[in-house]
Length: 313
Image (cartoon, rainbow, N blue to C red; front, side, top):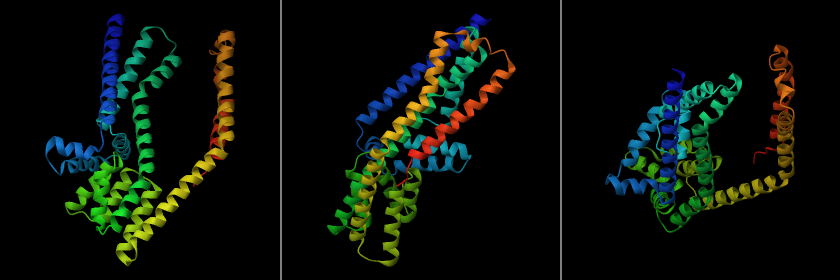
């Protein structure tokens, strides 16, 4: 019975692994050739409002469970074609299959739990990494996008047309997101609400400043071009200051990495040189109670060093 269970778990794990590799390769190839996701969808389907259906599905999931809404926002930012429930099912199935395989192979209970959780949650970690990377790219593209809006206004275009220039000329992700905002505006949604929805999909302080500048100018009037030029100057100054702070705190961050990894390296070396050093005490109930104190201080030290070198601009 155990051997059949092992075969079934290995089969399911291999299927999930192949599907995950194919999913990653397909998404990477499509993103390499992608200039603007919205324009590509319009050309493929012939429907100008194709992006609105994606937004409706995304908004429905945001109105549900808070965890599912947060997970869906992360998946949206990662630009991966997967449902939040599908990601949860994939992660849970992979964890269970790995746990069963390691159980049949005779791996210790604590070790198989740690290994199964680590490798089983890799799909979630990959999605989170992609989302973080695309959000960073969005923030980097926002400065030239605001410059493009400012030049469009200087050329005599209204604000809506200047925003549409960004949707057509800028690459993904910012071109796609501005295009979806334009679609919402064209189908009756207020411009302020559409841009606020964009800021919710890709949270950014600079995007909030941009939305505030457009909203204040529409309510009170004034020279919007000058406001946007001052805004881009402030955004560039913030970016330069952030890079300067990052360079000045490089020594502290490297020290934190060394100090943080040193205890783990020492434990690994001791375990390799003397395997019985820790193994002989695992059956002692007080061993884990005693080890909880240095582990707690170790985690507190990592958190404190992280806060010391993290400076918000």
